Image (cartoon, rainbow, N blue to C red; front, side, top):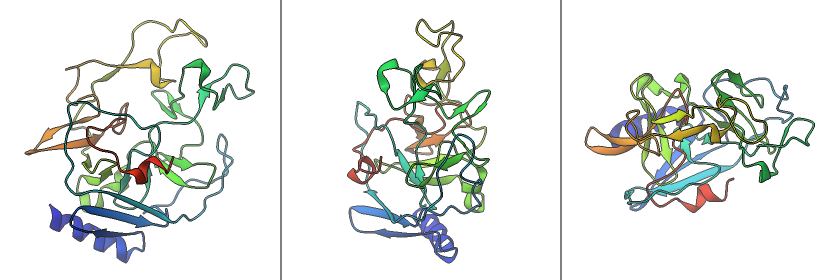
Length: 245
């Protein structure tokens, strides 16, 4: 597998997308934040930001260790081999007093989902990415352009475990809640908010962090349905990901 990774990185270097380096304990992916595909036209409806090149460097352990408890980080949960941050969640919360009905005020307790079962918001493009206020392009969901030469390894999580994308292979164990919300904006649990979902053990193939032991080792998986990427980690999260929120 390590030989395959090096081959992928060589291809990416030729495309001037990212560089890969490693030491005895760490490996790092560096890029200018440019994906291996065209991005949507920004600014656009729901996203007023302008794309800007970035100086990105994400380092993570070469030897991740799975703990008995998991931990959540709000923003960047991993990085693709092409050097693009993976950020499935959003910084937007339901706010009935805002003209857009959302803001960064978390008091409602309802965190907006950018990709919903019935559509996308916040300017998400056809590759399932968009820009933040800094002009940084990032993904909320995987796309098939991340399958370099068809291989399912698409990146690394913040704790060093690999992230794979095998379309249609595994089903998440996160499910829409039944019934309706008891707080504003009320209505049926429809996937508009992260809190519309609940983890039901055994209802799918993957654990709470969208991972499982597969072919002899623990791996995370990107899925076509919520949560799309892992939103928690079983290992120690690198500080590089904590500060790029």
